[in-house]
Length: 347
Ligand SMILES: Cc1cc2nc3c(=O)[nH]c(=O)nc-3n(C[C@H](O)[C@H](O)[C@H](O)COP(=O)(O)O)c2cc1C
Image 1 (tube, protein in one colour):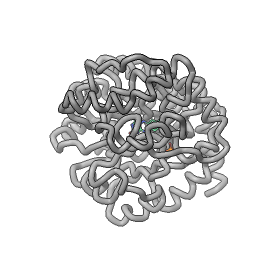
Image 2 (cartoon, rainbow, N blue to C red; image 1 turned 135 degrees about the vertical axis):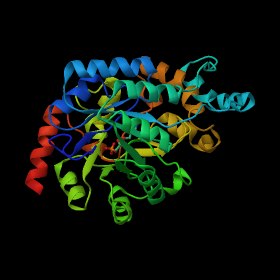
Image 3 (cartoon, protein in one colour; image 1 turned 180 degrees about the vertical axis):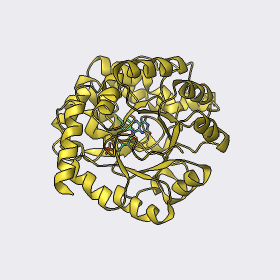
């Protein structure tokens, strides 16, 4: 029987992080160090998913995970897109950008990505933003792939368990990046990682992974002592040497001395946590009016690329969690080793 237990030496998952962080080098270094590396594939074409998996396999023979956003093709309302572009006009002017292009593609085709993931055959496939159909879980299981579903509230955790997930990743509000909420309003799923664990655990028979604000071995020991089976850490791995984020973004992480993160839907149309900056502030008043993911995410793509090219971090999405002030300047293997040493000392 497939089981997430004993998949690797340590109960640590390097979180999937879309946008360039999870290079093949990062994923492989984490898996080689005895934890589970995850490739974020939500923004990758099906071909890139296969190529990235092959690249990882050239660097490690250990298990790894591939992650996708569960999403359907958006219905495009041209008038609403034009209105959304108008909301972004002040930002374009501040950046010296002329007219914002209308994207020709709003997101990747999920079904084609899932086919590619099954062909790539990682040990684990993790999903966020929605739940899979039973038939999709069956296909993954038939391919020998374990399924992890993300939940931000009890109802979502129960739905993932009922449909056949092999483990549930509980994402607390401290977490960096996008909220995975798919039942109820995103702004209503506000439990912290430990409170979410306490709320869900009595109802779950499958292994539980917790994510959000876990930065060191002490945090890890506390989560495991409270009943979690695994921890999933994003921000802690975001600053690793192998992480592929822009150097200026990485520097902003190192500069953080306290939690200056905010949750915003202004960048993508879905609530996500990142460092506060001018883009978030300029869009604060209209953030509720922007179109839902993936439309706003695609629209702001040109802004984020232009800002990255000019190293203008005030207009880049600097996703990270509330533990950002505790990031370290280490290689991934060193970080895994430090976490294990701290965890063992604290247990
Ligand atoms: C930069 C960044 C990108 C992220 N992208 C994804 C993603 O593609 N898929 C996903 O399931 N979670 C994504 N997340 C959320 C993580 O899986 C995880 O919930 C979060 O990092 C945990 O909180 P922490 O950052 O405080 O460790 C992302 C997080 C960050 C920081």
